[in-house]
Each structure stands twice: as structure tokens, then as C-alpha cells.
Image 1 (cartoon, rainbow, N blue to C red):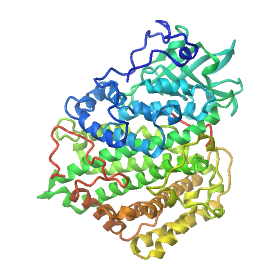
Image 2 (image 1 turned 90 degrees about the vertical axis):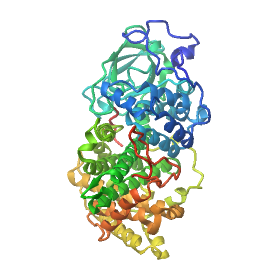
Image 3 (image 1 turned 120 degrees about the vertical axis):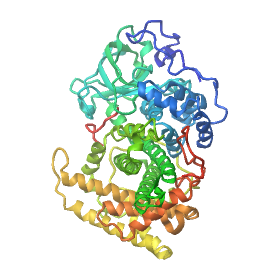
Length: 627
């Protein structure tokens, strides 16, 4: 797919391409990505077709060749070849809702796609996936904005940036000082947006601007800006920032100096920008956790190989009990992260009214969980995880650096946890019974359950209940009634007891003004762990077929998830070491079995290295941050 030659403003007026020299002071903008041999996708973009293409592209000389991507990282160069390959495959179609001509219909499927890309290279996933974030406010605004215009450009391969943060503003959207003042029938923008992903390389940016001098919740509006359609010299790029991780990504910014934009650049309503951003973040936070899932896939693939070829004391590392225990803990964390992410993605369709809580839990919980997994993997890899030229495991160093930024995207861990802490008195377990007829999440987590279409109109800034945690007593009772998995049942009962204690502790918490107290933040973290354990139990009830594979024997994957949760809640079960040992042993004993619950066709080894052995070897506006 090639780049479009006109921006939303010029396309809307029928004036054709912006005259040469318009846009930033840097002169004409380069093409978003270089052209590729294939200009149209051979088949509709799906996870299955992407897996096949990624394997092909990862060969020597391909756009995802690990050596090529490592070289780009070393030079802090944009991964243009990989992004162009994804364009040609048809990834932009998944950024655009079906109602506007794209193929974006199910959030869980999109999360699976971005996870696959992140498993190959996080920088590529961040660099290309930013277009989903850049367009989400426009889609959420519906026909009350330039949605059809934006769809045309995204489908043509144009990247879109999301201009929220400003110098010195951090997570506080209400501190934004970039202004939009009325100018004739349109608007005039002045100020800076920084740091922003794709700010320089892309021509399109969805910008949050102050439209009332006093600001406030109704003092900001959103605009879709095309740099090519602005008067020359009124939009200037700010330099790319050197970063510790995702070095090749375009983390830069823009400065607006009286840049004129037409009236139809407005997204949504005047004064509705903050509300629209906060609702859109409920979707983007769920998508962001796919980056962590991909990082976990990548790390486990490296670990699986390492365990099967590294020898200590005359035997393989995989045969040492300590190594199996650590590897099993890493596997259990991956399953738990996958469970929470999948539950959140399907909740976006089925209970969007509760997404303010679900998305905050997912974003606060999953990246931190995977960061802990990476520490476990790094401990086993040792120095080899950082030797790029010797052992072939140096990809771990880049992976670990790249993932450190994920907890900061779209609201940091602290930001999301603080938002959760603020509503704990309303959400605390046991405060109110579920309404009659409330469906168990096990119903809509079934593989054959038809999901409701995504509907941004159903999103709310606050919710009085959490259907998932509210379903825990029933889920535990159902598991106990079957009496077929006594070890898992004992763990589930321990989880219920911990959740009930959380409800009592949250009920005793005294409300305070300002930032949440340390006690409230700790309770919010416990809430996340209870949510995660409940999600695992609900998926187990919804998908009995998960018991058929090696990970499901005697509910092994579920016991691994609950062991991690209960350990964090101070109630580690006595048989946790045995569970971790079994998971760790399976990681190398079954090298062809993907470490995933949701897709048996997933490629197990996302990293292709030149010296790889054969398979026989082993909610507040002040609480948002968007890089």
C-alpha cells in the first residue's frame, strides 16, 4: 500500500495535495515507509497469515531479519523495512473499524496480531501500532468528526500520531497549554506536543488542545491535523529523543506556531476532548498489553532454547530443579498475563460500561507482571543475555530495554493503580450483589460465544461494579461441585478468602483528598491480583478444552496462575514449588507446544537466530501518560 498524497483537510475541500513547502520547517515530508515489492495483501490480514509471513520475513535478508533489526537499534534508526512489510500485508486495515471500510471488528483478534509482531520486535510493534492509538479518538467520536477522511488515509498506509503529552506536563492532561483559538470559520493552534510517537515521520496527528483559557474538564478539544495542509513554517518538528529502549522509534514532537486548521478538523465536540480521550484510553490500554504479551513470548522462546543447550555440572540446565522452578514461574506469569489481556479484550465488547476498571487493571497489572517474568528469564540467562556477539542471546538485552517503556504507555502503572484506588470504596468485593440476570464472564469467554460489536457509545468514565470479581463466588462453587480437581479447588477457595478479606479491608479504608494513600494503593494492587486470579478461573470454566493439552493436565496452567496470584496475596499454596517444577519441565520436554492457552497454531519460537539449533534441542484527566 502506498502513501496518500493528500491530508484530511485538503481532501475534504477537494483542493488536492498541499503545495510543496507546506508543513514543517524541515521541508517536504518523506514517505512514511519505503515501498515494498508487494503492494496489496495476498489474503485478508489474520493471525494465521501473519505467522506465515513473519517466519518468511525473519529469514536472512528479510525485513524482520534479527540482524537487520539489531543494526537499526544500534544506530537508533527507524525499522522502515519491517513497517513497510506490515503495510503491504494489510495491517492498516486492522486499524480501521469495519463501518469505515477497514477490518477492525474484534479487539481480542487485534491484540493477538500485535502480540505476534511484538514477539518479533517490540520497536516495530510500537512504531507501527501507534496508528491504532492515533485514530481511536476519531473512531470513538463516530460520524461527528473526520472519521471517513481519516479511514481513507490509514487504509492508504499513512501513520497517525496521538498528541497528548507536553513538555513539563507529564500525565496531567489538564495542564496542557497548547491552545486552539477560533480564527474565522476554523482554528489556530499554538504550542508544543512532546514526546509523541511518530510525530516527525507521520503527517497526521490527533491533537488535544486547550479551547478555553481556564481549561478544566470541558476546556479541551481534539483536532485531526495534517501537517501538509498547514501554512509553511507554522508546524515545526522537535528533535527525536534518544531513548534507552525502542531506540529506533520516532519519539519526537511538534511545535505549532499559529497553525491554521479548518473547522472540520474538529474531532467530536468543542469542549469534549478530555472525555473522549479518557474513554478512548480504555481501549488503547488493553491494546498496549499486547506488547507485553509479545515480549513474554520472545523471552520464553529464548529461555526454552537456552535451557535445552546450556550444560552445568555435567547435565543440561533444564535438568536442575532451581532452573525448572524459575522457568515454571516465568511460564505461569505468561499464562496469567495472557488470561487477563484476553478477558479485558473480550470485556470491551460485552461489558464496555465497566471498561474504566477493566482496562485500568489490565494496564497496571500485565506490564508489571511481564517485567517480573523478564527478570526471572534474565537471571537464568545470566551474562549470555547481554553478549550480543558471543552466545547468540544478546537479543534479550534489547528486549528487556524495549519493554521498560511499556508500563508508561497510555497511563503508567502508578496512574492506572491510582485511578483504581480512587474507586475502591465503590468496587470493593461484597459491597453489592450482582443484579439478577447478570451473566457470568465464563459465558462470554467461551470460544464459540459471538461477541457484541465494539460500541464506543457504551463506554463510561466510571462504573459502580466489576462483573468479573463479582462472579468469583459462583465460579468457585461450580468448580467445587465438580470435585474433579481438588488441588485447583483448594486454590480457588483460598483466592475467594483473599478476595473477601480485600473487601473488608477496603471497607475500613478512610477516604482522603488528593493523591491516594499508600494503604489505598496497596489495596488497589491486591485488587488487581484478585481480578487476575478470577480471570484465570473464569477462562478455565469457559474453556474446558484447555484441559486436553499438556498445559491443561490436572488443571496445571490454572494452578500455575493461581499459585502466582496467591503468592502475591500472601497465601502461597504448599504445592506451588511442584506446580512450577512441572511447568518448567514441560517448557523443554514439549518443545513443539506453544506457551499459550489461546492459539494452538502459534509459532513457538518467534526469534530466528543464525545459529539456532534444531527443534530437538531446547479515570482522572490528571492521570494519563502517552509516549
